[in-house]
Image 1 (cartoon, rainbow, N blue to C red):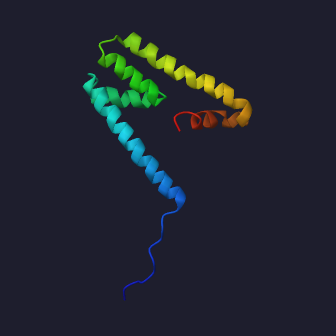
Image 2 (image 1 turned 180 degrees about the vertical axis):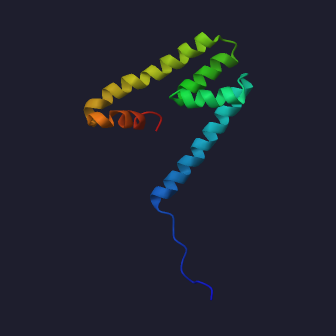
Image 3 (image 1 turned 120 degrees about the vertical axis):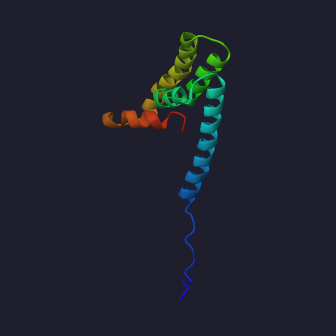
Length: 113
């Protein structure tokens, strides 16, 4: 016998998660394409994504490299953009008041999300 039970609907949380995953996927594909177009290999692009903390810093790095800048100039641009996150986190810390062991998790949630 065929089941006549209704299919479960997606919860609002699942729908939001799916929409965010689509946006992140598009962002990641564009970063990969721009990085390879700037002259980085696929493995360099993967390493950059794994080692560099913020997306803005990653795009700044490949923009400088793609424009003919040096590795040092690309690192400097990425570091300057990344340092703003430290300043933002310091400003949010008194508001969020995370317990000591949760500071790294709270910091992660205030960046790029």
